[in-house]
Image 1 (cartoon, rainbow, N blue to C red):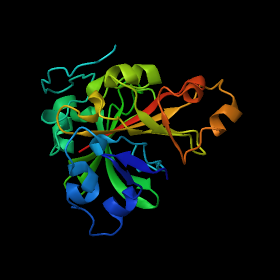
Image 2: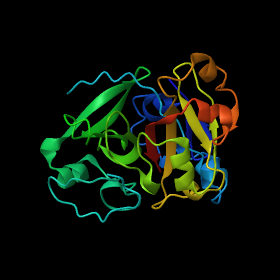
Image 3: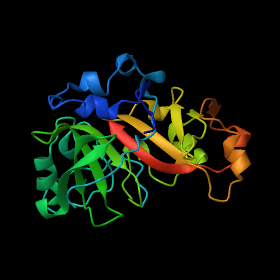
Image 4: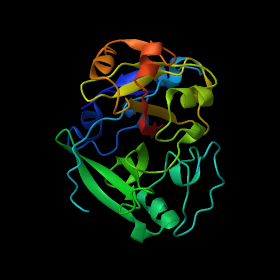
Length: 255
């Protein structure tokens, strides 16, 4: 399982935090996704983003958006961007609220296997790769309290701040209004943003935090990729990093 960088802290224990025991159904958000760094004033390292935790998804059941759209809940609603703070993707949201917004027929709920532990997960539009969105819950019993929102695969969903899949380092710098820092590539060729360096993306509207994973271009030289070690931190405008042309492959949103 890959480590997570969210809110300025390394967060590697998703399974242990969410479902390490049979009683871990209602863990407070402060104990889960808000280590001490998350409560520090922004900007700064308070919004250090993350890489996604890699999970073995053994499921038991089956345009550019640079600003937050107005949310008008209703069955079958089709949104383009995750809006934090209120409404469908508020911190206290639930599987029921998703069903009201998108129509129950477009929502599936299941336990997924995260490092051997079950985690409750709802998926919006599970059969449509371009509209698919996955939400993990804090309270599995009530299917409520957003823990993580995963934007990955082929989906066209955008995250707060205009982040979306496929963006380049230059694109992210433009959204952030300045260069930022990221870790090098791990054994799975995943690089993770580690510090927005006080840029615009360090403070997301609605109070949520972001985690961003990038992967190098498929044509990049293996030696060039391996030279960018996951143990080191690089600037986004580093020539070596730019040479392998990484693009956003996954975005995590949490509170």
